[in-house]
Structure formats: C-alpha cells, structure tokens
Image 1 (cartoon, rainbow, N blue to C red):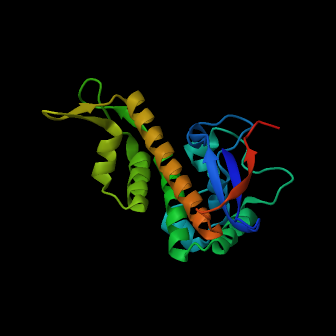
Image 2: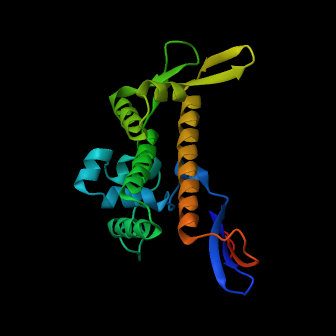
Length: 227
C-alpha cells in the first residue's frame, strides 16, 4: 500500500500532531500470490509466533496448510528476523500504539478467520448452477471462520454460495456455481482484511494525535514501486 505521512505544525511552527493516510491497498494479495512473493506478513507471523493457547483457540496450522499462503513457496524472508520474532515485535508495537489486549486478540482472530475462509472449497450442488461446501475439511474451516468472526455458520455458508439481489419488489436469492462461490469467498476475505486495515490506521492516527487546527504540514509520500 501507499502512505502519506503528515507532520502537522501550529501557528508558531511547533509540531502539533501527525497523521497517516493510506492509498491503494493491494487487496488482491490477500487471496492470490505467486512465487517468489508472499502474502501480508501478519499471516505468517501469526502462524509462527502464536502461543499454544492461541494455536488451539484460533485453530492455527503451519502456513503451508492454508490456501492463501501456500500458492507460493516463500514462507520465510532471507536476511530478516524470523516470523515468530516479528510476531512478538508486532505485539509490542500494538502495545505502544495503545491497543488493548482485547483489541489485539480480536485483530488476530480476524486474521486467522481469513486464513480459514481461504480453505473453504466448493463442489456442484444438486441444482443446476448451484454449489455446496465440499468435504469435511472445508466444513471444518467454514465452522472455524464463523466461530472466529462470531457469526452464524449457516449465514456465512449462504453468503458464499448464494447472491441476494435487493429490488423494490423484494429480495431475490440466486444460487452460485462453484467458480462464482470461490469469487464470493475471495471477495469476502479481501473486504474483511481491508476493513481491518482501515480500522488499524484509524487507531494509529488516534494514538499519535491529529491536529485538526494545524496551520501547516509537511507531507511525505511513500508509494510502493516508486523509488
């Protein structure tokens, strides 16, 4: 993603606040990667650094087990700290920003839910152009995602395999074939990640303190791929 960092100044030229604006979050990376790329670091950090209690509660497994991560064989970054150490560093950074333990647990619960969503696969349903959740493994990950997102499992399943059109005369529910269900699943995963990202940026801005009455600013633009 790209970011624009504002350093804000009052009328006397003293720093009075700061803010981070983000642009162009690469949402497609959440669901589709290729060698030698990786998905977002938080997924690997969680898989490697979670405590035994977190592993059990979030139903975690090695990154090779998750579809959104195993599309590439790059799980560790050469020359950098390992994922477990980075997870601990991320937790410490969240402490500095002022995120409570409850908020941190909720963040990683959502991150884990996205991984489980990616492991839900589909097969043709009984009706033409319909689909169903395929196999016990997919049902396990669907149930895990629903539990972590604190939503009803049946409602989550229906949101993946059907599309509801809202019209003036009422709602029309349409079945989705397996290919369309995969698109629906990936769209949901990208949307959840994007909403979580926006919320985190908001929390960071609250923590560093924005000055809505700033008289002047210095801005630093950092766009990926622009050197």
